[in-house]
Amino acid sequence: MLNKLFLSLSAVILLLHVLVSIRTQLSNVVKQIKGLIEVFKEKLPIIQTLGNPGQRDRHWERISEIVGFPIRPTPDLTLQKIIDMNLEEYLPKFELISEAASKEHSLERNLEKMKIEWADMRFQIVAYR
Image (cartoon, rainbow, N blue to C red; front, side):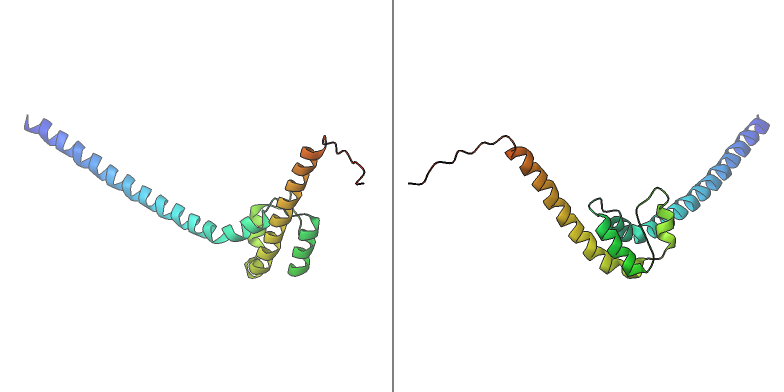
């Protein structure tokens, strides 16, 4: 009886050691993930600015002029490549371009919407006098 109790107690102690080990490993993984998230959060402004869907070729030309080399949204331009370019120093200039692009894009969309709404309108013009 005492032998079975000792074996059960040994099993519980072993299980506790395993659980503590797993908890420590999970804690380390969580710390690593948090660190990666923090690094990613630092890159979000450049990602959001360059990822603006309202940017047209003219905007990308201005961005290329600022950085001193051609940069265009292509299938080859990955997030990692953008991060590796270390473009953060140009962020204030990029933000101005992106803001203008957003406003222009909004105006373009509204103009297209107005064209559709007014396409079937007929105006009758009558003589003034």
